[in-house]
Image 1 (tube, one colour):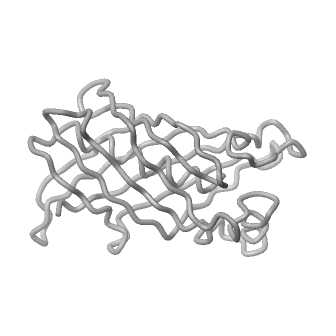
Image 2 (cartoon, helix red, strand yellow):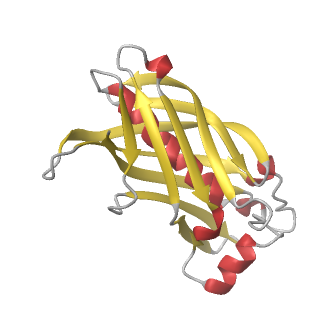
Length: 194
C-alpha cells in the first residue's frame, strides 16, 4: 500500500510541470537535497491514522507546453525504504502479509497521459506497478511554482494526492475493517531542469 503512495505521489509532480513551461525540458526529482516526499496515510482500525513515507526513490519527468500529450514521467521507489516511525510495524508492512518487499523490492510508475483542468492544475494518468500488480491510476496535481533558485538551477515544484484500493494490487485486507482497505497518497517535490 505504501508503494502505491509513493508512485502516485511521483506522478502528480510530473503532471504539474507540463502546465506552465514554454519549452520541452527534462527534470530530475531533487531527492539529494531532500526536496521530495512520498507520503501515505491509512486508517488504523477506525481509531486513528498511520502516517508514513518512502524515503528512497528516484524519478524524472519531461514535458512540452505546446504538446501536453507528449509529457511523461518515470518513477521508481525502493519498497524497503518504507518508514512509519515504528520498526516492528514497518517489518510487518514489508512482510508477505502486505507488500512482500523481498519478492517485489521496487514499485514503479510510468505515465500514459495528462489532461489540463485549469490554471496550473491537471490530472496525470499512468501505470502503477506495486506488489507485482499493474493498475492505471489518476492523480489530480497542482503546480506550486517554478523559476530560478539561488544556486543557478531552474526548478519546478508540485503536489498531488490520490486514493488507492489495496486489493487492486493483490494486497489482502479482508481481515481488517473496511476503513483500512484504502490508502491515501500525498506527494510533493521539486524537480531540477537538466
